[in-house]
Length: 173
Image (cartoon, rainbow, N blue to C red):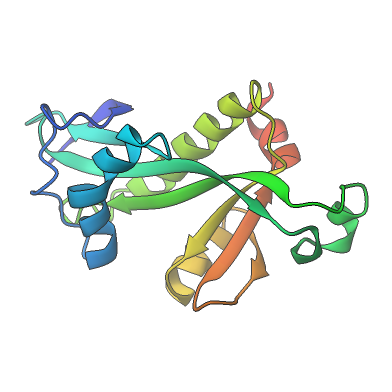
């Protein structure tokens, strides 16, 4: 399966959600059962990278939403200038690559696209950072190699963040 050149918004009439398999049931189930419902409810947006061979096939996807974090979870150097109430952040709620396209660097491509999308949204609706919840230590390592830092390990998840300032350096031109 050869990936297309651009991510597009998930469309249930054009994309085969049921055929997607990334090897992680939680991520497969989200795409197959919840992504469209969450979009309809106005709580997230899922973007997909289709296959050039068959545009219905999904090579990779990411889902963005908003959330907030407590100031106390951030490193002191970042938190000192922030207000005491919860801090708005962008959330990469889901990010997955099909087993058919794993090993081709699409995880990195998908993450960069998601971060660029977050940065573009931030120009209109400011957020302090981007956060992700890693499912396990292996996924944590994936995000850490791109500059994410751990801020929380409660509730059986590993929450990491990357500041919008860093995204500004990457995408701000």
